[in-house]
Image 1 (cartoon, protein in one colour):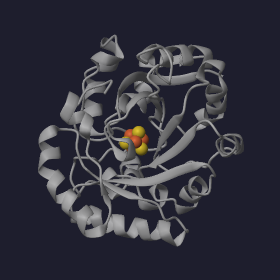
Image 2: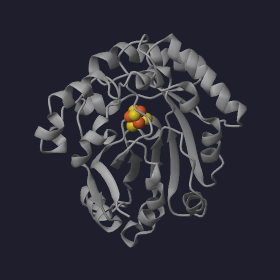
Image 3: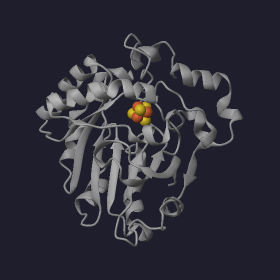
Image 4: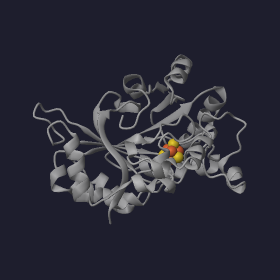
Length: 298
Ligand code: SF4
């Protein structure tokens, strides 16, 4: 089996617990969600309604497809950045499959190592580069490949892995066992459940039983990270956090401003920080947008 991914790049982690840590990102193809509504306002129908109406893409992606951008553009890096809906649209929609890489684990390992400063995870000064599995949704079927990736002889000095997940996918037994048996790699589940503002219906997006699986996985850490723009979103965070707590989960909660455009981020960040201070939640910036703008490979 080959891994299908859209991009791999070296950057600093811009969100969540490991903000500022030099990291290689591996962005897998495919997602069970579409998150069409980010940035479109609260009156948008939810995804199930849109599907009944035959709507599969958010308006910006629909426009790109109507303009044949998916056929006329040659390289992934040249695809336009969009400002609404899922910001990694090319990694989730089948129309953009031609931009994906299908690679064996050997090839993926070589690609990832080639991105690090010294061709290895632990540098000669003792500092280590983190690996971040992101997407799309990296816990779809690809998770059967992750133990093979981590066990690869060239990955022997890898010390930290973060799995950025929408927290809807059950863990495979072999991946869970591998994580629990680790004394080398520290795993972190960065759980980013989607609120209504995404357009994904609550019952499909907030899955405490799945989060419980990650939480119960030995030798790993977990935190929840929510994207919020206004008080409605914050009310939903309270409700979601309570559902996770009812399932026995007591982990740090991060709030991150809705972003994509730097101007939106600036408008939102102070309000979000103040909410975090009130609730004892943690503020997550989108540091990479300030550093690099809204671009691929950051
Ligand atoms: S869960 Fe993440 S990758 Fe999937 S559609 Fe939503 S924003 Fe995109």
